[in-house]
Length: 511
Image 1 (cartoon, rainbow, N blue to C red):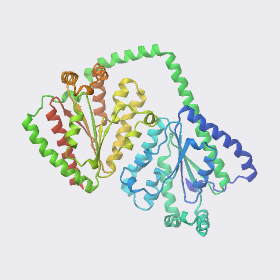
Image 2: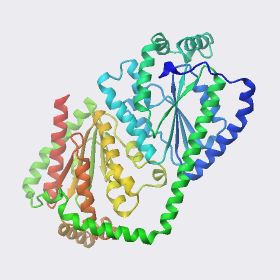
Image 3: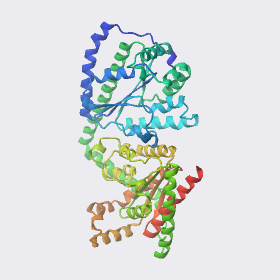
Image 4: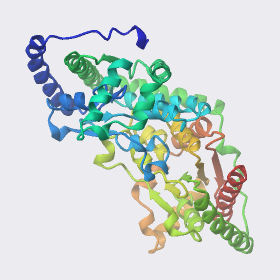
């Protein structure tokens, strides 16, 4: 691919000066339109060293409102970044709706420089490419525009630029030993780039190769590429908005269609697989059994927590379940003997304005633990396929694709060495009603019960259907669901602790 690119292309100075003012004005206008429409934009600069990424980024942003973008220079990982899954550092830098993130270097480092320097092993490349494509697909399907620019120069030109930079005291620092090594082994590194371009050139995030021997030509091509991509995305979003307006006008018809669909779903219910129905809710422990088992398990947790820290193994625990299902009680007993410096409990509420301005997984990625620490989520990313699905807070298309997005995220966590377990705290409808009434009658617990809890109860069957589908689609070897029989709080708490202990002990044996 790269060897067929014509690197002799040039633009006369006069033509460059004539064309640039119009492009600069149009880019500024398109940035404002993207902001108005809430379109997040990621512009990725990759390519050979000394191809002019920094210069071209500086040239591009001159035409933009500096309040609407941020530039990220991606170099070696910091200590904090090394202690998180690789994609964490990039998820946390994704722009909110209407803003632009420009990347000088990017997530492609893992399959380029890190691969060249053998920090990324050959056996890990398939997972790395999968993570990259999944990351980009998730963002694109959520409405992000991803523009990827690969700046290409030949070996001779690269060496000449390195030599020129090295001779100047003010720029010599920009040429590293790694740069020199990659130039000396240019063909080998070019093959890695070829593979990267081939495996990550997609409809939702295509690559544009920029012939960068002539800097004026490169600037014009970059401007033109960015402008075309922005204009196309704006047209796409405007068309989608028009369709939504038309759908609103025919809401009555849509309501009738939804009614028919619900009736069909009701008729199909007996034919659907129910995981929850298999749970034996009669399982229980006496108070004496509970105290004995709890004490032993908490002592084990205390010891294992220290071992996790020493071996730098992260743990991610997600708790979902029926309202009053016992999530809080289980978490409290789980963490009772843990070192408070080594875990965080993340209570998940409705997203705030900043969180809503990002991909729904963004806020969860930000809370993922670093190596050796434990992150516990009281409610999780699975709200997408439960409450958001049922309450209409997202479209059917969005929650249906969320199963794959969630599985991919959890696979990234697992590949980074994390223990990932999800608990569904299961009780029956009668037990929930009993607990609701108990909370209402106890002044110390009244804060736990709301009108919304009672309203959600009326949708029990809808939630049960959604939960069964969720369990079926997202329980994997690397991130299993554990249904916790919770009518007996004693039994439920012990099962949660025992599951965590067994999972950590198994992981430690694999080390």
